[in-house]
Length: 333
Ligand code: NAI
Image 1: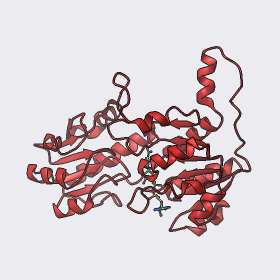
Image 2: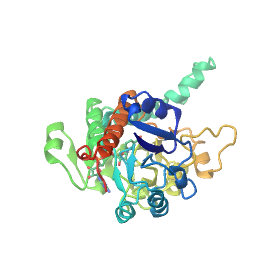
Image 3: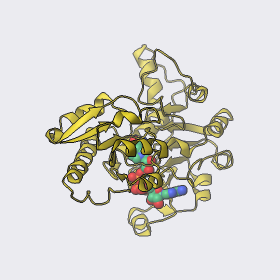
Image 4: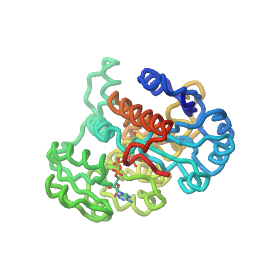
């Protein structure tokens, strides 16, 4: 039986892992803290660790893992911007991830956020519950005929683009590696980043976080966006420079901002801070604007996506314990 320390445990994740048939082959050691320099020692006695998006997979934590005899890191996420792959290779730690568990889950949440914000469902919901049936301040926009720019036309971005086509929007896409055949087949036009920024009414980010994409929307690029445009980010918080975003909202430049991720989400998202309050002034300020809608990194959170994450993660662990190859396309280091 392989022992695995599972960091940043939350009940909705634990239950999916515990009910999986692999429970007889994997001895899960669930800990509710995130991985950092202080908590790396909790992996003592485990051959593998299971990490999520806000765990700190850096040289320091990996060195502790190496000393403790940990050999494998399984990421139960697609994004791996929090993992120092160079350090993992140097310390001979192998790393696998779940490259695609349900791009539809993320794409559908992207649309849910946008439609809620645009048609002000979040405000209407609260109003009606208080028996206020007025419509003042609830005017939205048709999506049909608007221009949508999908930044990053990979697995998720393409589905978002296709859904927006179903709304009869004109869809533009920007990607350094454009797939022209896909664009032609779906009536989508690839443009450069500047054209996407300056012409779109709705901009949706589906880009991995890398040194090049960090602060893609910043104090120089945000002012180029069309006045009244909507920004949606369900990728990674650091794609947007929060201070510049706040300034653009204050100036009244943006029609709406829908975020499932936030630059400083670690330690805030996935936690219940209702008793403590928010120490992050920028996030608190963002939440004061009626045209900002935030969810707590939940775009992946569907039954189907969780089932797939558990399946790929446990399959890789079992294969590794038997000396077999990892599932194709899952290995990072
Ligand atoms: P993918 O790898 O299939 O597609 C990413 C696309 O972005 C690629 O086509 C790539 O060429 C393009 N790209 C890379 N750098 C770019 C840049 N600077 N500008 C424009 N395009 C660029 O990835 P997938 O599966 O579509 O996921 C995208 C991101 O969504 C992930 O990296 C992850 O950060 C995020 N994500 C968020 C989740 C959530 O729950 N909120 C869940 C899963 C993923």
